[in-house]
Amino acid sequence: MADLFREIARLEEKYFSDAWSEEMLADTFEYDYNHLLVEKRDGKVAGYLIYSEVQGEAELLRIAVDKSMRRQGIARSLMSDMLEELTSFEAERVSLEVRAHNIAAVKLYKAFGFKDIFVRENYYHNPEDDALIFQLEL
Image (cartoon, rainbow, N blue to C red; front, side, top):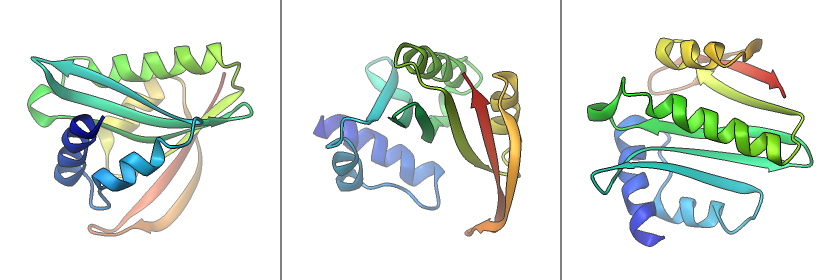
């Protein structure tokens, strides 16, 4: 798992201003309510999704796709896999937060039926942005 966490941490540093380190990733998966989905291409991590599920409530924590592999359905596949797993866990709903200016992600979530339920103004820094809170009833 260390090599996998190393690859994910590299992607985190590329795409998130609040990147999770290898240590944070390892700590996250010490708990059985946290789950990792990975899509590989040519032996490398093309994308990943991290979510938690506790007593029917789920939260999408992280999702990223390597820039060189975007627009190939990887994020859509990861989202589908997460929702399939959550259905098998009999989860009732899943929520997430996203930068308001991340138009591609907002479109993806809306395509899966997520509803915008709240705005946290100036939540993100580096750069500053609002957080949109989305939720999907399963």
